[in-house]
Image (cartoon, rainbow, N blue to C red; front, top):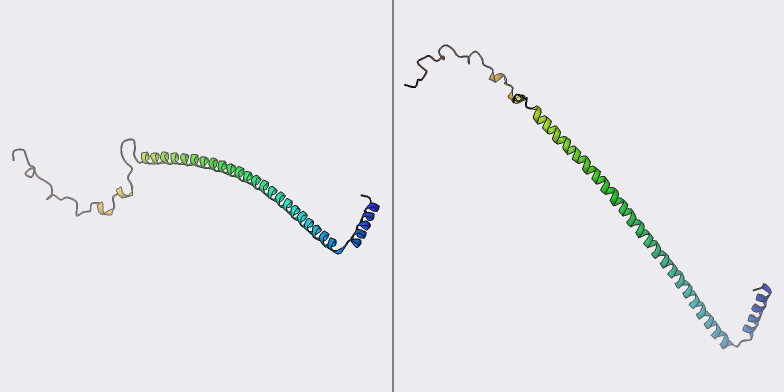
Length: 149
């Protein structure tokens, strides 16, 4: 509306309010207050509905994002676990081969084993002058058993 028209309407409304009886003024005030309350409640309800709708949309979008991220994380984890399993398999194979080589290197081709530290004779195993046989310990032909005796 034009400004002069608006001013004229406001003046007319003021004149009408001045000449209206008091009970009608009270009733108009009550009606205006009721209408203002209804309009306010309606506005608040619309805003709340819009906010709830936006929140629901955001919730759905976030749920989709979380699901997608979880799927990606699952795939990455599976890839890592598979690669770790392959590496561990290779390590196990290498360990078995090493164990076979070590156990086969303990034997020579002649069937002899390499002596370990425990198999080497110590000083207690070396014969001394007292353990050497003398002429008295040598068996004679009388000591030998024959089939007839």
